[in-house]
Image (cartoon, rainbow, N blue to C red; front, side):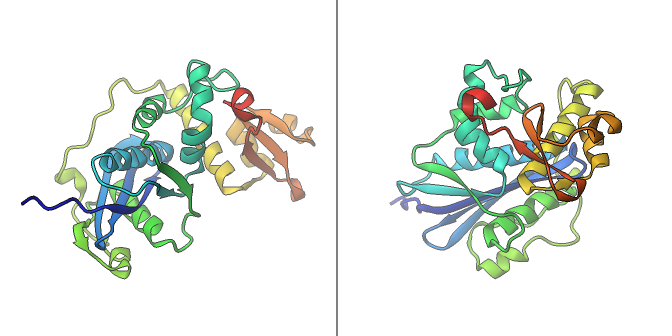
Length: 265
C-alpha cells in the first residue's frame, strides 16, 4: 500500500547575491506535519538579488502544488519586492503591457510571468524581517548565501531535524559547486548600459525595502544626476518608480510610489 503524502504546514524562501548583479543563490524549505523538512536551493553565476528571491518563491510554488496542504498556507519571505509584486503590482503591469507607471519595462518579467502562472489557491506570501532570528528565514538565507559563494550546502531531504540543527547545517568549508554541477549559461546578456540600469534599480528596491537613508553623494551616484542639481531640492520628488523623500540631516529615503496599481505600476 502506498503511503499517503504528508501535509505541508509551513514554507519559507530567500535569495542572495554578491555584487548585485553578480553570483547569486536561493534557498527554500518546506515543513511537514510529521516534523520533517525538505530544503531546496540553487545558484546562478550572473544574476541579481531580486531574481533569486523570485526564483526561490517559484520553486516553492511548483513543489507545493504537488503536495497536500491546509486550506491556507503562508510562504514566509523577507522580500517586499516579491510580496508587493506578486500581490499588488502584477495586475497593473499586465494591464499596461508589462510597463511600469513611468513607462519603463518591468524588470524580471520572465520570472513574474512564471510566478503568475504558478499561483495556488490559498497560498499567500507573508513578510518576515530579515536577519531577525526567524529560524526558517535564517536557514533559507544560509542556503542562498552558500550557493552564492559557490558552495554546496548540506540540505535536508525529508529528515526530521530540530531547528537548532537546521541553523548549523551549512558547512563553513565545502567544495565549490562549480566542480560538482554545471552552472546555467545566460543567453543573450543585456547590453552593459542596461545591466547598469538594472543594477541601480535593484539597489533602489533594496534601499527602499530597508528604509536606508542615503547621503546626497550616494543619491547622486544612484540616480546619476549632478550633485549641484540635487542640492537645490528640498521636498519629495520622483525618480523612475520611487518617491525620493527628504530626511533629517540632509539624507534621503526611497519609497515605492504609493499611488495604487493604476498610478504606480
